[in-house]
Length: 273
Image (cartoon, rainbow, N blue to C red; front, side, top):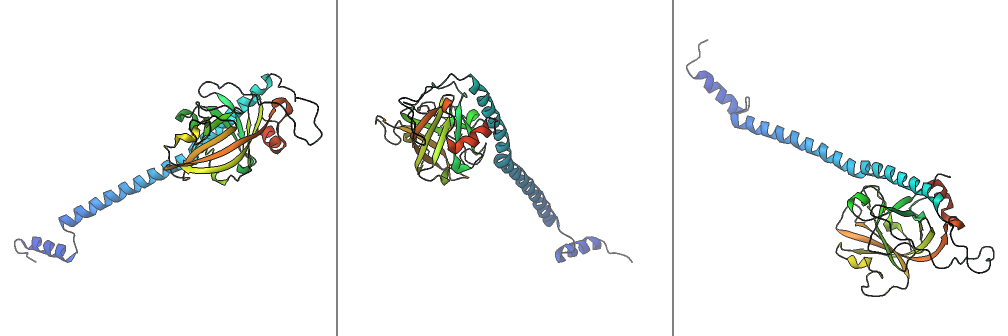
């Protein structure tokens, strides 16, 4: 069969018009869409890996480091000097013992370990180190960070700490579950400080007055010992801060052993359980 000059080109144009063979413009659009689709899939995979790293792997790394800090702290407890004996005559069985004014240690240097925090409301295995400082190298790895311009455990004033909520150990993930009356225990080389949760508050990040010696009351001289814990809010966001306030109820020296409620946790934390 003989094809007229230009006939083949006419046939191809007709096929392009009827959809049998794509025209140049359609081919370019399809190629561009395919490339964009592949890029979006790649970006989605990278995003999923990043989320997995943030929500899982940073917790794994931080948990391991924090466990090591607790073990190091436990090893140092053997070198602690004897604590003061209870004042006055021996108390009757079951009665509260008066150990006098709480011993207040000097603050350690940056990233130095202050002690361990136990919060039964957060579970029987909740033990987190308290470390000096609130910079990224502390909060992202070492545990609860102590605001260096606030009081130390047991002191009159505001002992304030910060911690991540969903990543890097998620040390304060369950801060919103605290109920008034819940006890929060702080163990240092000197002893155990028992704080009682009072209330929480949602504030903007600019509300630094929560760190005042009397929280939210600048210029007021403190007469009580506060514990203030700060974390991000909501759980997967940073638009706000959730603040948990507690008051010191009692303390006891290291020589008296841990309070009964956390005895098992302490034993497990220092490797005796």
